[in-house]
Every structure is written in structure tokens, then in C-alpha cells.
Length: 442
Image (cartoon, rainbow, N blue to C red; front, side):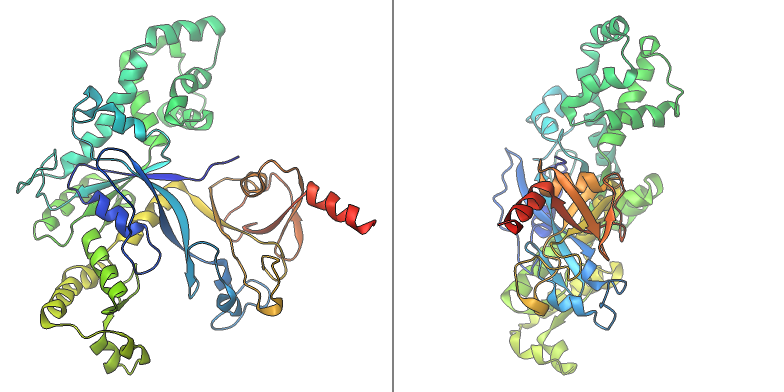
């Protein structure tokens, strides 16, 4: 069965990586409470914010403002607020890496090995320049070096493992007359690779159908192949953290000139954690992922009835909030934390799919009549997945009878899913069909 996507957070010590993870692991205005350490990797559940199917006016009976289905949308996991849904996604917190890890420095290859099942990486970079390559306090450090050395460590790790047995790999390749994809997949499967990943690597490096014989590859070609494989297998989003620091601007400008814009996200994880803590304690009304933070005074001024539910703040706390608004929220539009996970999902090409039990009411089949909850479940699949792929993810090994999408239209197993394309469906197994038939004959 297709497994759930896994996104790993990596970075040197003191980059703000665990703070970033804390700010990603709660869908409500709370601070995450997962037990992170600096020795073993920790898995946690983050929440990806997406437009929910309940907000689509194209669905039958859902035209209106707000769309009627929004009021009945009650996810089993995560939440849905005004059509914005938080969907669980698994995150991996990998302890801080340092230069030379591939040689055993720090805790060495163990941390690199923890990355092998990740589908994408979020590299948290201290863009303030106040920590050096090993995470020690300093001033004026160039954080663009961190971006280069992390990729270099992964490349050296993969390249070192491959070259240690390259002579034997090449001889066996010739002896059994294998394809380049078959031979390389045999070496890269331990990194969570697939034949499709290896094929994309070779196409990207040489061009489709233009691969030279693997037996004739020079050491330089092998090096280039490994670099390309790392880029394909471990697509990376760079979270430029600590943007509220005075020295951040010059470093952001330098990195922006060297890196593709789609890889970069500006963020302040500590600001997100601070705002969520204040919201949890009842001092502010905060919508994560936005610039909107309202205090009791703000709501009273606008005549909002929710003002009475918020606590009074002292002048020191008011000043901190105003400074945060000026330095982060108004300037950048948000703390950037939600956007980090959104960008990682875009890099992976993740598509949300909404399995339902009733394709006409979009309910879960658990009763409740006209007011029954809708769109209880949502799963994330990779771009290019077929109806059959999603069926196996949802139903496991149960044999398929049929799949229907909006309007009761049956779709083929090899039809592709995408946003508003076969992404709201009912999956029916032949076991269920046989069971219903047997009951109907009694």
C-alpha cells in the first residue's frame, strides 16, 4: 500500500529547528508538547492547511455564502474553519547536523541515515547569522554556508557508500546485462528510492533516452549522478528562520540571489509559538498563518462580542505584541510557519483526497440525516496518483468493486486524481458488495 508522506526537519543545533517543529505540530492555538530530544529522531504530526472540499461552490447544493457544507464539515482528524482545513502529515525531527557528519563528526552517519525514508526536507536555517556552523553563539556568520554544507553532507554520504563498492557494481551490471535503472535502484533502495526516482535522476542528468552505458561512466559522471539523485530524492525547502533579527535582512538578500525563490520561506518560529501561547492563555485572538492578532482592546473597539472572553494585558505584554506586529506580521504577512509546510507539500506535489461513504450527501454513513457530518476524512497522495492508488491507500488489500466520484459517476482504476478531479470519491470493495448481496437473499 502507498505509505503516508514523511517530511524531515533538519538543521544545525540552535537554528530553531525544534521550535519550528513545535509550531507546526498543533492545529489549534496551542504549543506542541511532543517530547523532543537531541539524540534520537522524533516523529510528530504536523498540520497542513488546505482549502477544504466543503467550500467548493461547484458541489451539488453548495452554492451560497457561506457554502452550506461548511457548517457540517467535521473532520475526524485536524479541523476545518471557514473552509480552511488542517490535515495531519507526519514530520520527522532529525537531531542537529554539523559539518563532517559523513565522516562521523558529532553523531555522524546516524543522523544522515535517519533521513533515508524522508520524501522531502525542511532545512531550518538561522538567517540571523548569530550561530556558527556548529550552532555556537557568534555574530556575523554567513548562513548561506549552511545551505551548501547540508547538501554536501548528504551527497558525500551517498557517494561514499556507492564508491566503496562501485567496482563490483559495475562488473555485475555488465555480467547480468542489467539496465542502469535496475543497477542503481539496487544501490539506492536503502535510501527509500524507487525505480521511478532513479529514472527521473538519469533523465534529468542526461536527457530522456540519452544515457551512456553505466560501465563507461567516469568518476566525474558518477559524482554528477549522485548530486542529481540527492536533488531528486530529497527535494528541500529552506526555512529562513529568525527573520525578526536586525541582521537577517542582509543575509536574506544574499541567499535570495543564490537560491530559487520557490525553495525559500521566510519565518519566525519563536513568534508563532509566542502567539499560540498567548491565544491558549486567553490574551489574544489569533489566526495561524495570517497577520491577524486581536487583543481585548482591538475587539472592544470593533464591537466584537468575543472581547469579553479575552484577558487584560499589562503594558509590557502589549508592547511586545505591537513590536511583533511591526517586525514580523505587518512586514511579512505572517510568521511564515504555516507556509513552510505548505511549500514542502507543493514541492512534493501532494494532492488532498476526500473519501466519503455517500457520494451524494458527502457523509460518512454514520447517521444524522440532513445534518450529518460531511468530509470526515482526508488523505494526502502524491501528484500523478491514480484512483487505484488511492483505493489501496484507503481500503488496503480488499479487492476493488468500483469507485464513484461526484454525481455518482464511476471512474476507472487508472484514472488520475487531482484537485477537483476524482478527489471526492466513494470506494467500494467487492467484499462489501458480496456481503450486501448475501443479506439481500435472506
